[in-house]
Structures are given as C-alpha cells and as structure tokens.
Length: 254
Length: 302
Image (cartoon, rainbow over all chains, first blue to last red; front, top):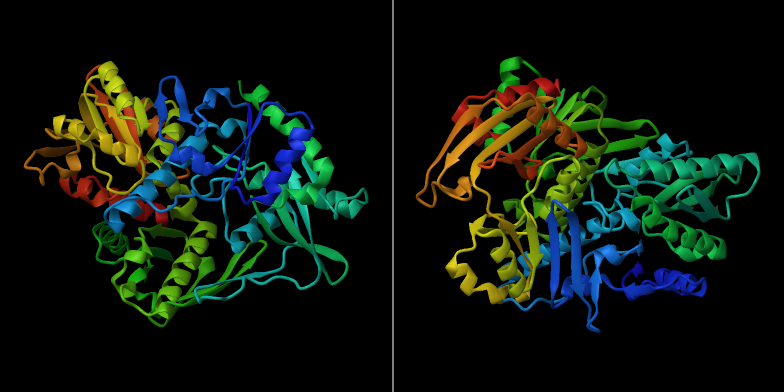
C-alpha cells in the first residue's frame, strides 16, 4: 500500500495523489495526519522486533505500518484540534503528547517515506534562512549575504529580480532553470548536493524546492529552500519520477 | 572566547562558569533574561557568520568563539515575558530564534546544537533512534485502548507509564489506582513500558569523555525519590569499556557533544537505554559524586 499523507487543503499533494492514481499506483490511500492521531483505537509498539503501529481508520479498516510500501509525506505539523480537557494546562499537555506521538508514528515509516521526518520537521528539517544560506553555499550554489538579527522583523536579505523554483527528488532535478547548458548542469548538480546536505546521518531529506532568482540578469542565486515545495511545478516529468521513487522505496528497505 | 547561554544562576551554568574561572578561560554569559540588553546583528556569508555580539558594552567577535555551552529554558516561561507588552514578547522571541540560529551555525565545540536536542521531544521517536545504535529499549506500547494495556500487562507483568513528550515526564507504576483510571486514556494516548528490575545508571558523555553514576533507589523514578519519602544514593561508577564506547557512539549518532544517557543494568544482565537527555542537569550528579563533569565541559569548550 502507498500513502499520500497530507492536510486536506494541500493542493499540491492532492495533485500528486491524482497523478499517481492516474499512473496506476495501487493501492494508494489519501490520508490526513489528523486521522493518525485521532483514531479511537491506536497501538504503537517498540520492542526487539522494531517499531510499528496499527491504527483504526474511520471506515473500520486498520492501517498497519507493516503494510505500507511508500509514503508521500506532506505533514508540516500535528493537526491537533480543540481538545476536551477541563484545564488549559491539560489541553496543552495533550497537544504536546499527540505531536510527539505523530513524530514517532512517522518515524516508524521513515524508511519508506519521502520526505523522512525528523525531530525538527515532520516532513524534513525546517531551517532558518541563515542556515539554508550556509548549506547552499556548501553545496556550491551562489548565495547573497544574509543577515541574522536579534531584532524582530529584519529580513535575512535576498536579491530582487524574478525567481523560479527547482524541485529535487533523489538524484533528479526539475525546473525552469534546468537545461543542458553548462551553467544549468552545474546548478542542477549543486541543487542535488544541497538536498543531500540537508539530510542527516539518521534521517534524510529527499525532496526540496529551491527558490532561485536571477541576480543582475545573469547569474542565478540561491533564495531559499523548504522541504514542503509545490510539487505541481515539476509537472508530469516529476510525477513519473515520483512514481518510480515511491515504488522503489520498499525494495530498498525490506 | 567561550559563550555560555542561559540563566547565570542556574546550577549547571554556575558550575560551568566556575570551572572556566578556575581554568582562567575567558567567557561571556548571554543571560537570556537580559535579552533586551543584548542585541546583535550578524552577517551570514557562504563560509559562516561574521559580526559581533555585545555584552556589558563589550564586543565579542564571533570569529574568536571556540565553544558554546547552552542551557536555555523555553523563553515563553521567562518572567520577563509574563504580562509583558506585545513588543517585548516579539523581541524576546526574535532574540531567542536568532541566538538559536547562531548556535546552529557557530564553529567550534557546541553543547548542544538546537537541532540535535529535538529528539528528546518525543520519547518513542528517540527510542527508535536509540535502538538503531544497538541498545535495547524496554518493550513499549503507546495506546488509547485500555484493553490493549491489559493484554500488554498480561504478557509483560508489571508496567510503568510516562509521558510521550518531554512534558510532565515522571515515571509511575501502573498500580491499581492507575488501572482503575485506565479508561481515561481514550482521551489521549499514553506510553506504557514493561517494568525492568535493575540498577539505574546515568552516563554523562562530554566530548568523548564518559562519567557514569550508579543510583541505588527504592523508587521507580529516582529523581523524585526524596520528594516521595524514598531513597536515592548516587556513586561514581566505572562502566565497562564496551558500554562506555556504545554510549559515546549513541551521543555521536544523536549529534550531541554533551548528553545525559539513562541506562538500566537489568537484573537479567541486559543493558537497557531509557532515554538521552540533550540538556542534562549534570550538577546533581556532580555534587553527589565529585565527578569533574563541569571541568570536562569547560576544557572541551576552549
């Protein structure tokens, strides 16, 4: 079974779900992270056999982590709604508990997920603009200087002209700046390297949207990155690759 | 120059600064309650961060910083933001976010970087990471179904329960009183674990050094033993080389230069790891055992 795990309002994920269905990925389920943490019957176990979960779904079926072959993970936060507790302190406590549970559930299926969760980002590490800038420079992307200020409202600084996006999925790079000339090849290579550097030893990130903009009309400079990009920018070519990626995940881990 | 971040009078910080004084190492304390007096502006370039921090009218060049020890409390709990103006709250948030970013990017020995400390926000998540380094973790069930808890208890015998997150993190026995209230877990899942009899060990790893403490107690959570009228006796303990090496590997895998690792030497001979604290209150263990933990921290930061 494959999952697209997303908020119901995530249009990019819904687009990917439709595209993957169209391409014949089956069985494919669309699931909200709220379903994972609001189930009336859930069991998450960790023991010598490993970590796993079984979660009752609203339609009576049971979602078992062992049955999941691949996940498009678009979970940005734990969607905890109003909780029925007598005090605000108890409600806050329950909110933290459910957030912590969701992270652990996602960690169970991390080996077959794109992106993999980590403690500072359920769909991949969230970083400040300054951290992305340093990482992008290490990857070989040209970066404009950024500011780091203790004052509120100070923008990290970015170049002004028109922008574009690049999507990185594993070793593949998609976007309007990607072509076969030398500069674009170098750029694509650096974008791929940034995606690799954004991973960690224990948990990695496979998918990144990299905001690029023309600087002075000639060079492309790094403008930002995030692990929850608009997938629609990659078009059909991206969906084809995503299908391959998701179907290959379980083969590499089981 | 060494930077110490947090509340200066807090025990672990006070011990680190005392050790730095003894070593004659220059340091600056960025006291988080004084965020309004400590503004900073830094430039992030392709190679790192340039600029100066100001403290007591004195400029500290980022390039001269060799180490950072940080033990910041959640800024939302600071007295300075309780009933403070919206502008003050924004400034406090911005100061802490910018400081966190700098700590993340700073060169040198950092105890610890923010991203590395996050694994402890979810205990079962961290348990999965711990397992990958070869440590055993207690059999664990997180559930909102009382029947599953009864089944788990029937299989494993005595159970303890504790929070999933880092909040209200007190370990308790699932005694008859708790069993009588088990239906309440339908409102919020709870973490249950098999109770394992044995001896608690706290291992502090400090930049490659290991300081282990053995705790003899008559309570399930020794940290609260005295409060509950119980007993907790701490003594320095020399772990076997292979266990010490595994602790160092675990800390390294979690990206922690400083870690407080909670182990159990089970009566059946197994070693279990309960969790890893990325901001350990080592002062309690140091004061009971005279192990030179603060000095090791100070030396590593130079």
